[in-house]
Amino acid sequence: MGLLPPSNSVRLWHGTFATFSALLLALAGCGPTPRRVVVYASQDQVYAEPILKRFTEETGIRVDAIYDSEAVKTVGLANRLIAEQARPVADLFWGNEELRTRQLAARGVLKGGDHLLEIGSRSRCLIYNRNLLSHHELPPSMIELTNSRWSGKIALAYPLFGSTSTHFLLLRQHWGESNWLTWCRALAANKPILFEGNSVVARAVGRGQCLVGLTDSDDFESEFRSGKPVARAAWTPELSRLANTVGRTPQGPHPQEAAELMRYLASDSVKQALTQAHALEPYPSSEQPLSEQQWEATIRDVVEATGQLKDLFLRP
Image (tube, rainbow, N blue to C red):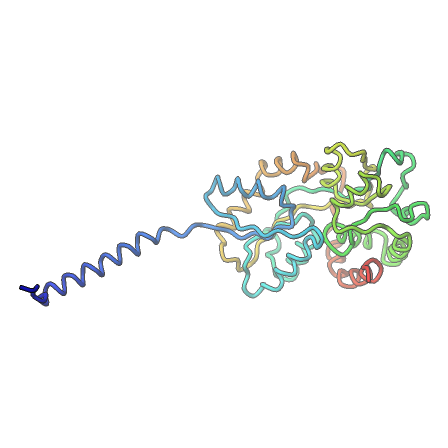
């Protein structure tokens, strides 16, 4: 005898059980959504990555970090933040120089005021190959880099990006536009060797390809600690201090996690770790940071000054 067809009550029971089982399976695969935060970082990955990893280990919050290439340091991520302003993807911008962070805050791309965080600084520096040049032979100021003696012997990152760009723009405020433009023209005529980034500048000086170079303190330290014959000139006001900065986007998708990461980056342990890694330097109390008026003037002149630098230093 064949099986009898199920009764209506049996059909109903089977249907209810199937629905309940499907619901249990669905719930089993739907645990709590992992907490995460998105960071755009122009801080060098070698320094930032271990710190962000420790943050995840301590809090359970996953960090999705996107880093800039050295060739377009800071500018690439700044433009991306501007393009995404209406619908932010990033929660935080971690920059290793202050100008772009302030620019983004002035445009409303980042929150301003107390939402901008400074976590120490590094400096621009004039370095030299001590096997080829003595300390006494160094130019007494950056103005002297236009002397014909240094023609073809100066290493320089393209001054349209990153800390080199910021340094040149701050010199414009320091010297005044007319004197600055005269110096830029003379420096370009002195045929500096242009590189994609500051670490490459430091290496070029270390191997003797150039006698002197303008770079960042962390890149100098890396070359110095690797045993290369490099040294640095004494710091002067012409060699800017560059603050390490963190800013939040106004409508970032993970505000609570962003606030937690901001607090973490402001901690003494993070500052100490960055200083021990030579990504930051102690900031002498005798040196005064730039005033708000100086920053406002620098930001106001960025477009014009960058156009002038492009005309002088960008290769055809």
